[in-house]
Amino acid sequence: MKKNILVITAFISEIEENDEEKQILEIDDLIDKFGKKDRLTWIQTRKIFLNKKSLNCGQCDICKNWVTNIEKNDPIPYLPNGVIYKGKLLCDEHLPKNHKWAFN
Image 1 (spheres, rainbow, N blue to C red):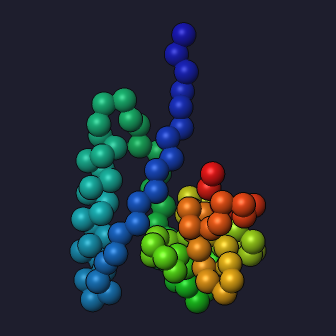
Image 2 (image 1 turned 45 degrees about the horizontal axis):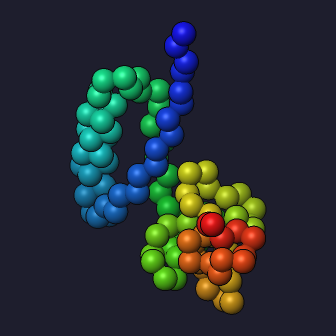
């Protein structure tokens, strides 16, 4: 008997503002090539321009990985969890081990 599995993968890419359109097309091409691998059927692609001022996202003060603050409204799906701890935005891997959102 066969089973179906939904594989959700998130990538972050830094692009230059003055060449956005070309770079987005290049990213789409990479995703297309990745999706054509055996056993994968492409369903959808969604792009979110990460904006610290208008979206619930930021970069961990230690490792600079993008995170969404899990304790605020509207967390961004597929971004790792983070929270403000002692005035700093930290990802779940850099929170103290006893913190409720720490990755253990």
